Each structure stands twice: as C-alpha cells, then as structure tokens.
Amino acid sequence: MATLNFDEDWYLTNHPDVAAAVQSGDLLTGLQHFEAYGRAEGRQPCAPECELLPPAPVPVKSPLRPYRASELDAFVATVDAAGGLGAPEAQLILANFTLAFDTLVDLTLDPYSEAYVACQIALYEEVSGRRLDQSLNELTQFNLDDYAAAANPYSWRDPSALVVHHLRIGTAIKHAALKPEPTILDLGAGWGLTSEFMAMLGGDVVAIDINPDFVTLINRRATRLGLPLRALAGTFDDFSVPERFDLAFFYEALHHAVRPWDVIARCGRHLKVDGRIAFAAEPIQEAWWPAWGLRLDAVSVYCIRKFGWFESGWSHTFVTDMFRRVDLALELWPDAEGRGGSTGVARPCIETLSGDALCAQWLGFGWSSDRDEFCSCGAAEIRIPDNAYPIQLGLDVINYRAQPLDIRVRNEAGVERYAGSIPIGPAQIAIPVEPGDRCLTLHSDAWVPAEEYDTPDRRTISFNFSKLHVRCALSPST
Image (cartoon, rainbow, N blue to C red; front, top):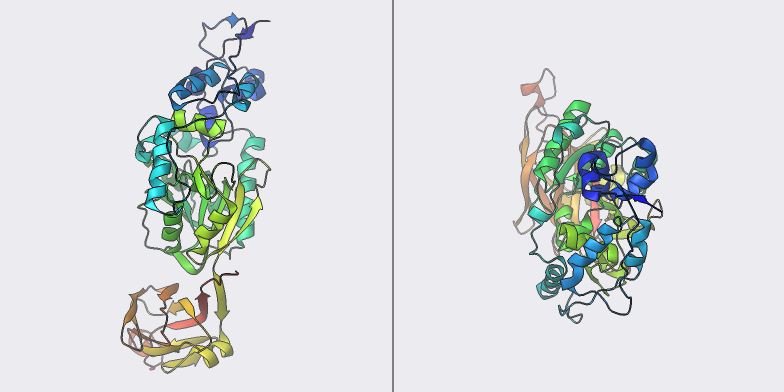
C-alpha cells in the first residue's frame, strides 16, 4: 500500500506552530502532529513535488547488540526515516534501543564532586558528539513577529494540547499555596507560557532564559497584553536579580542544569525568608544512576545526539537531598497529567510571630507599639530566645517615609549581619543569623513625621514592622 512521502524537516519549517510544539515537548515529532491533526486540516506533508511512495522497510536494531556512540548519528537518521520519535514505525526501534559507552563513570565518587560532574560531562560529550556549550545548544530559531502577535506563546490553536501545560503548571502553583499577588521567578522560561500563565493568575513575574530571542518575545508579549511580567537574559549559572521572591519556578527546565544543586542554592539566595521553590514535569528516577546522571533511554539519547541538550535525571533520595542542603523540605507528587515526570514544592521550616507573642519573646529595647505594628526608634533590638536557633529572620516592614531608609544590623559582638535599605512602603528584609547570635541591633535612619508631613506627630521613628518570620535549619529527620 502506498504512503505519503512525509518530510519531517520540511513540515516543521513550513508549519512553525508545529515546530514550537515539538520544541516545547508537547509533541514528539511533526509526523505525530500530521497523523493526529495535520492530515485532517489539509496540511501538506512535504514539498509540493512529493509523491506517493511504497512503504520502506523499517530497519530494526537487534536488542542483543547495543548502539555505540559512533553509531548514534545512524540511530537518529533511522528514527527520522521512520517518521520521527512519535511515528508508529519508529516504536520498535526505540523499544529495542540500548547504549554501550566507553566513558568511565566512577559511582564511588561523591555525586556533588567536580570529579563526578566531569564524568557526566565526558559521557554527555561521548553521546552527543560535541563539546558541552549550552549557550549554543539551547537556542531555538523562530519568527519573532509571528509569535509576538499570536494568541499564546506557542502559537497553538489546539485547546486540548495547550491545557496539558496549564494543568501541570497550575497543579504546582496550587501545591505551593502562594499568597495573593506573589512575586515569582520563572527560570528557564523558554517561550514564556509559564510566565504568562502565572502573571494572569495574579503573580508579579520575572522570567530568566538563556535565549535572547525568547527574552525579547516574552517582553514584547507582556507589553502587548499588559501583564506584570518582565524577562531578563541569563543562565542557570549566572542569573542575578535584585529582588527576593515568594516562589522560584522550573517547568521542564531544571534537568538541563549540569549542577542543579548550585542552581537551587542560587535560587535560595533570591527567595524571601518564607519563599519556596517549585517545579513541574521533571524526571525523577533511578534507572541508570543511584544519584544523578545523563538519562540513557532512547528518546533522551536521540535528543542529546540530535539537538545537543543536556538531559539528566535524579533519584528521589538525591533530589530531596539537593533541597535539604539549602534547608528546604521537598514534597513530591506524580505528574498532573500522568505523562511522566514529577511535580515538587520545597519549603523552608518557618515560624511566623506577631502581636503579643512577638513582643514578649523577641523584642528588646527601641520598639514602641503602633496599633498592630511595632515601630523602631532608629536603634532597636531583636533578642533571640535561648530555645531558638534560627538561620534567618524575615521582617515584614513598612516604611511610611517618602524616601528609602538605610539599615544596618549587628550582633552583640558588633559583627555586621546585614546592610541595605528599606524601600518606600511594604517590604521584607532578610537577616542571616549565625550560631551564637543571641541579640541583633537594627540601626536605621530616624525621622520625625511632623517635620515631613502635615501631622502633629513629633515622635522620632524609623520603620514599622508587623510580622517576624523565623527560619530554622531542617533537622535530620525532617
């Protein structure tokens, strides 16, 4: 029986919405789209001169002999000739796939060590056939004007396909239990679907991506749609933003990090004291490595070889430990749509104090009561109870002055623990605490309201604060 001569590259080039779906991972190949939707939509499967051809025999690799790295280009070509990853003809090829590699990965090494990382990078370079350079391998080419004007960042018109991503992202957001109007850091934002969705949910979003074209796309769409969203160029290794966030989020992204524990630690430094990290559709499994390493299934190896992506995965124990190292307790759920991967939310151990309990247990000299808040006179103490061992204190502060207030915090020995400024209005300041600190003095600019406003209030004051968030280290049993 004759079949259409389907051309995968031609189809993706001439149908950019399909290319976006494949790039984002919702579709495996253009052929999958053609068989499910494109044929009924009347889309051309190849150049106009393509003809009906008899079906070609599908070469099948014997499961008794694994592929070597030198054969992976042929493996990719064989899969593509069979229609790509999603084609029925390719499934037997994928099912029979195994890989033999020459790189020695020493499993006795500390999985956090640079020696073990070097083993995994060497394995990546053997499998991919290239040097590791994510600034090149993670880039995507597309028509910026078309996608900036589209109804959604993927330029999809298929609600059933798009809602899968929204359900995954929404499930993670639900588990994160954010307060209204949260500040969110979206890392590895890609096309910006996650960023836009979280902004539409009420978040104030900063998106980070390595691809400058994605950054431009997100910013152009945010301006057109009037969303509280801005994008910045950066990598997992060097991103930097001045704000602290209620949530740092990864969607199908963290597994591309070569040292994900460093990325998690960097995220932790950009969180508010009660902030958390969440992810969705991330690979947690122990099929190849007891801790972490390159995923060596057929689909992952295909993507590593063809696109140069770094495709890693982690065991449940290891991913939990990565977050524990920065004193965040991780909770996991299965993928919201049952399509593989996991959803996770990592939270700090926090006690929040206010009112009488705060005053009686933690406040020393220099504070006065001001309705439901406490007002600093410019030099005020926080005394740490004998039975408390915090690693960080977060103060929900309010600056009623019409200009920022400088603040410095020192411990009882005069060692500076924090220096910064309190912006106008509400904010949170995060003060690190070291073992042995039992008293912190907050020195801040003082002012007299009657001298700056039309008010009879002649008190000398600085800032107000309403809540103290006490963050403690996780115990070994947490």
